[in-house]
Length: 144
Image (tube, rainbow, N blue to C red; front, side, top):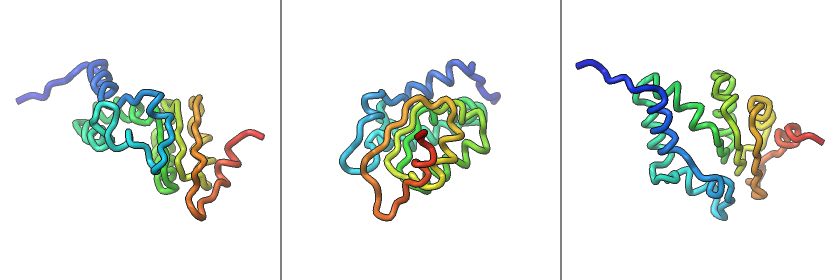
């Protein structure tokens, strides 16, 4: 049985429908840590469903990865480091990042991440900082 090849436009629309988080939800700061939408998604699908979608085939991964990182939410230093490494390895993804929601991970990697997201136009920074968490990277990233 041959594989069915969907047009890229259809694949893009499927991923957008599952992954789109409204700005009002994305930019809200929850009182209990990481945003609820990261786990359930606006459509109820959540981050795990998006990860499964991107594993369908290489075509879905290529089309979907920039869409998933269009709105990036960083909760920990480890997550910031991982996203920074992904952006370094895949320059087409770094151009796709438009909004960044910072719940944590504001250390050294934050500066690297800021340099790798030239098209980001919105940055929301949570006022809650973990014990012992550095903000040095954030300080270096923001203009004086």
